[in-house]
Image (cartoon, rainbow, N blue to C red):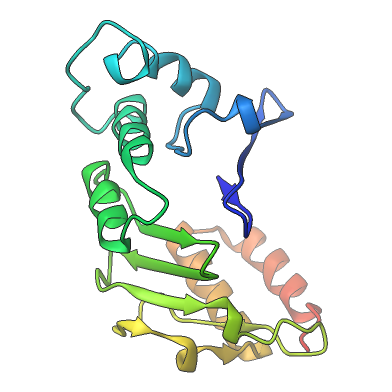
Length: 193
């Protein structure tokens, strides 16, 4: 799910190897879980808030159940809903394997996020970023214990930083040596600015 600075949103999925997008009238709910969007919308239509006959919202952590609850929360939210309310809605659909929770405020040009390792709300204000192509790419350690505005914690990505992050990802995926070698060789030639 992506949204622009005006709050217009779209989904982009690959289904059976084909790109599928939903926007405007084909995006009735600004919500997305782990099921195909069209399947999720079809499932939601069974419930009263969306014209169906089932009065009780579905419970549990199944993707379609979470979609219905999130779609209701986003339908009920006003454009002036508070960030805390948005995180409350995300908490209500959080599954055991949820790693990131992200709240976008495109009109304010802010992104707020929490991770499973740090449940403190952190914020990036895009108005304060220099996005010129001539500027170095920046990164933030998502495992850091910061909270609040993390703008000053952004740092330039160096070749060694890139290599360390790649090694960390390969360790988490338990990648076998042949694939590690290919990725490590590609990282060596990765252009850093």
